Length: 193
Image (cartoon, rainbow, N blue to C red):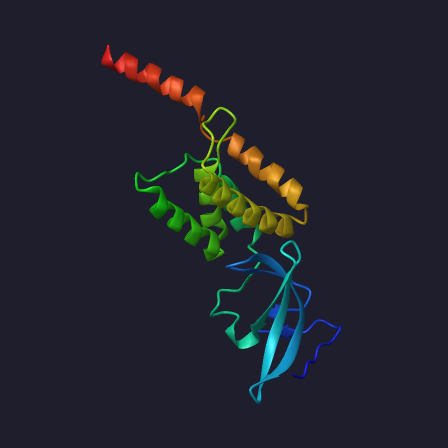
């Protein structure tokens, strides 16, 4: 196996070393180098991507970057739209949880920041709402983490600051939980009268 990497920024397929990117199945990572390896007698050029939070390094053939869905960080306007999505009303389908969980998982792994924002919005629970199930909580945390990492990287703020910003947007959304349920019950009583 031969490995070649250099210190100055190298550009391949529109990506360059030291740049942050989004890999759909893993979220935000940083291209640390471009290597050339010999695999089964063929030379292969690879992006070496570090996912610091996950303590993981991924090697992606430069020629496959687009087909695996690797992309640059979202533009500011997309981040703005994703944050706006959080203020909307949760859209929860009346299907079995296992089916919804698969859909949420697919949105999280799509790498689409707006779709990830929809998952965060739909699974968010305020203090006044009933507790989430373990699997709901896991999906919510995964979506929140993915969103916070990209928002943080784009806005050049820490992940903690990004989470605070996301939670502030969620708080601006429609009332949820016991207070909202009580209001809707009062409305139902008035209609029945």
